[in-house]
Each structure stands twice: as structure tokens, then as C-alpha cells.
View 1 (cartoon, rainbow, N blue to C red):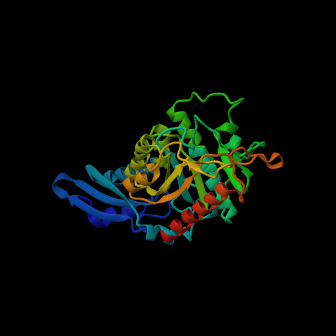
View 2 (cartoon, helix red, strand yellow):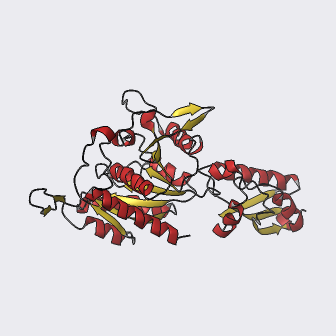
View 3 (cartoon, rainbow, N blue to C red):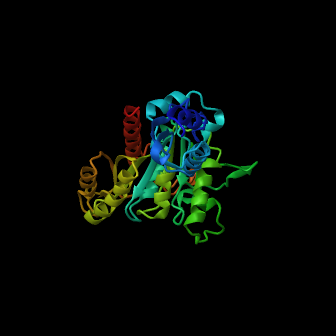
Length: 354
């Protein structure tokens, strides 16, 4: 019967699928247990990222290696390597590994913008937060992951298309933000009628086949609710910080809590809540009218045990013909300043987590 040393040698020679280092080098073999009377071997393995197709491939490699050495049955448990271990390997990553957006070796921070329902201004928040981060000197990308309700290219006034060279997609850049959207790949605003598996492939392309370059932050404008596309994205990402958008109305905040619950269940960090359409302020009287009520944002933040990142009034940007973007607030606009303040809070929070 195979012994523990042989198990460690055989399994230790296999590669962590993301780090491209052997499990011996990553010290990824956590436990080995052998039941000689049943010729059964159990191992606990730590890898860079769990719950992936790559993990399943490694699982088969381990089973084949141990059965080939005499074990009749094999049990495998997986866990994730400690973040400090991953940090050690980031410095050794090849350029390709470092720029693979879904690799744990990538230093880009993901910020997912979610909502419980449509119509609360989630895409407006996504676009303006991305622009504000860029105005603060950050390298920013934006994925319009709302596949059925894509709107980012129109909101940002984009007139050009991505360039495809050597099977690589080069994103469109506007206001310092690199962006990609399903809207670039459908004709004449046609509806998307694809099913889940096809959409999953598109999202994977947005991460793996787009030439993002070096980014500090990659924002994702998620579909509203907790459907398949939003769940797929949560499972794809190595880790993500989530912002939940709501209006002040109690019902909107109640529904938005579901999006926050999904983030918690998929082990993602809730960065904060943004309350959109918080009030309407008259240009004539200067008086604030709370059109959708009050209290939804603070109540949701309290329920999710997170921060209220900002409250954005109901309104629209000034239309500037020579720099047309129907949903982007100018830096010197009062709402544009609110987004700058919100972006700074996001930066400060993410820096504290290092």
C-alpha cells in the first residue's frame, strides 16, 4: 500500500492550476490520511482559487496519480491558499499571468455595482464612479455586464467601436475609462435572446480576451437582481468588492438587500451602499423635495452592516455638445463633486484592506 511520503511526492509534483507552481512549492498539501485496511487515501489540498473548472482538472489528476500508485479509493478536500501566500507569488508572476483578470495573481481590484431591481440608476452610478476614479488618477476599466440591459456605451457618449487584433479585443476608452459592453457586439440595439451558457462565454471573453493593460480598478455594472448572470460573475471573480445601489423608497431598499445577501453568500465584500435619487432640488427655490421618500439607503447600509458611501440627488448632467455624454456629470458639477467624494471613500476603504 502507498505510504504518506509517496502520496506527498506524487501529489506534490502536480501544478496549482493558477500559480503554475507545484503543490510542493506552494506547500499546498495540507493533510494526508491513509486507511491501509481499505486502501483509501484522503488528502486536503490548498489552491489559489476554488470552485473552478481548473480545480476539477486537478482533482482528476490527483485521483489518477494515487490510484495509479495502488490506492483503491481517493478522497479530496479543497481549500484556498492564504492571501499572504498568494502575495508572495504575485511578484514572480509572468506578464501574461499578471494581466489575466481572473487570475489570483492579478492585482486589479474588482468593484461590482449591484441592485435588487432595475430602474434605480445602477448604471448611472457605475459610469460616474468609474469616471470619478479616473479623475482621481486611477487606471480604470468598466465592464457593462448587464448583458440584457446594456447601456454604458450610450450613457458615456461612445461613438467608436473596439478594435480586434490577433484574437484580442482592445476596449474603447472615454474620460480615461476603458470599457467593454455587449452593446458593441449587437446590431441596431437588437435584443439579446441568448441563454445562460452562451452568456457565460461572453463574460469570460470580457475578462480573458480583452486587452485591459494595467488597471487599478475594474468596475462591473451587474444585471439587476440575483439571476444567473449575476451569480456567474460572482463565481468567476477571485474576489470582489460590491456596492449596492438603491433609492430611498423602503421597497427598493428591501429588494436591494437580496443583492447584498448574494455578495455575502459568495464570500464577496460589501463595500457600501449608494442611495440614488435621494431628493430633487429646485433651481428656483433651492428647496429639497424627497420625491421617493427618505431613509432607504441608511436603513439598507445598517442592515448589511456596511457604510453609506453617498446620496445622489435626482437630476441630469448639463448637456455639452462638444463633449456629449448624456449620463456623465462634469467634474465641477455639484453631483460630479459628490461622485468624486464617493470615489475617494472607495479608494480609502480599499487601501485600508491591504
